[in-house]
Length: 203
Image (tube, rainbow, N blue to C red; front, side, top):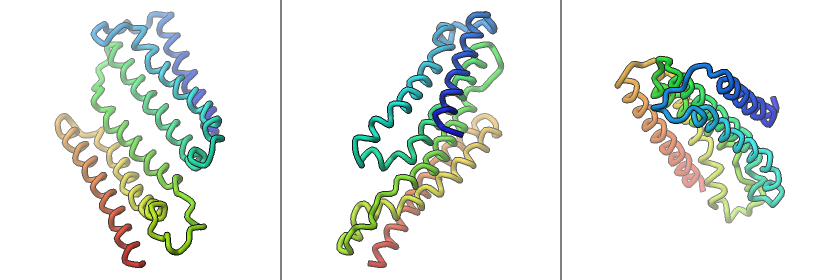
């Protein structure tokens, strides 16, 4: 599915639901979470800004290589942002309408989404090093390309495991969340460093 259509559909749908709730006064918003208008429309408005940025991005991509080389991963980043905002909006609506809902349980879902999106996006940012002379094989571009996938792989599986933390209870969920996050980041950095060292040993 086209990312622009998907993002536009989610943004318009979110606005439509918020307008429907506002007009019909369904589920009086708890004032302790702020004015009802803010709860209903703050995140949809942010989603609209993200969508506008996505539609204006092609203008930046035409400005040169620096922007164009990121084109392959931009759509994934924007889709991820929209999904994160949508999850937050749903959670906030449930909480503000009086539904028994632990907003903290969204934390593993949001961070897991970020980790998986990052893992799928980073490899798309490889730099062109084919035309480099042999004397520059240890350049920053070469090192960047070599360490991308080893760094991204633990992020993907860390994100999957992060989702499972939602099913844990109380303090154990938070402890598990931070443990998975730290282990994931340390493993990713360690794998990237080992890939770099292996590259040096082959020179």
